[in-house]
Image (cartoon, rainbow, N blue to C red; front, top):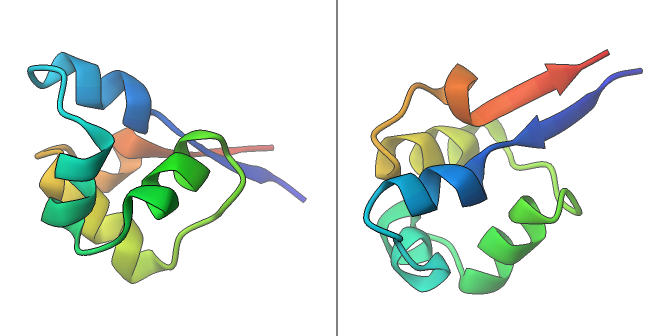
Length: 68
């Protein structure tokens, strides 16, 4: 079974060093959720994944990666 990883932290910093709190507000979740995502401790629902990608103005497949 594969693993879902993400580039959220890197993408936040590429976008004027967006804070975790700012991303959480834009994505409609909590800062704790963003922390868990960045640490690969939580795999988001497809809906949350799309909201995070939209908040980062980045295609979902560029934010979340599936590793075999």
